Image 1 (cartoon, rainbow, N blue to C red):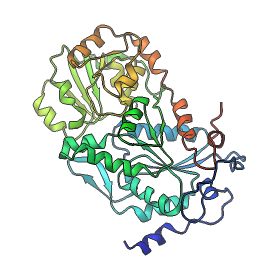
Image 2: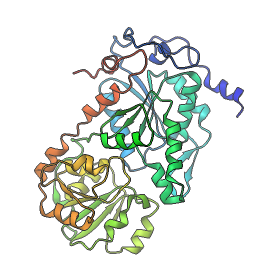
Image 3: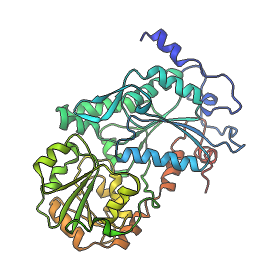
Image 4: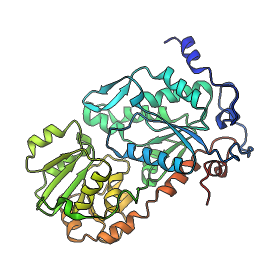
Length: 399
């Protein structure tokens, strides 16, 4: 597409609206404003709430923490009276990512992304992933001079290194370039923030993760009584970067149960026939698998957080993991009975089982509040001209 045609695709946002969009109030023509912060008149005193675009290349039917995080965020924002527009691969022609067909790559999304944003007239734009849709939204914002925020969810440099031997330094160079022009890059934990700072990332803000304590809760453990106990459970994508083989290769008593799907599933099923592969599960059925398990095992060394760990704890199930980013942020300092971290994963599994305390697991999970995480997300939308109080009041998320 020529630059001239692309420019036409980016034009056409209605010039007037009953609700004055925040983005249009702080931008004019092109280029980012550098004027000092000041408090603008609230555009939402009528109680309309905020209109927020979330662009993400990760979406259902994928089963992962990014999808559940963004979906839960949208549900909570909507419950407060805000309006969320997701831009996802489900709305575009797409092709499967080589060697990872569960991830869809949208084809030539620029014009349609521009159309969606122009028609929605958002107050804020958040770009959650660095794929084709994230890049299309970023391109639109930069051409129109719209401020936007991003978030760092996935260690793609490590994944690309595992799958295609791409040097990790190259991957982080690409990510730094992607995130550098946003007003803020949201990061899940302080530890990850420090690590990324050492790699040269800037303008980072904390956006902690939460768990849906109503959806994930202790319940009837008899759901898995047909399996030999103790039941050691893994939930997530079945891919090489998740180090699942570290778990299913362990000599453990009872049953090793794997819930999820991915490019490594057939290989793992053939190599470890004694493990039980249940396939992907969702909603209430997924909760039942958590509730029935004795220990949740998290063998990944590359996740930025690991939401599944908190979901297991919320269901009263202790966690066994390596002492790496993600589990360290969740389990370090947790009461005894919530799990174990050890470079010897088998030892961590057995310690978590022997010392399990379902009540302590649940109490610890309750510290990961989605309401607090959503407040944090909204506060991070602060951009030139608008302070944190502006966004929280606009989103009707007020102490």
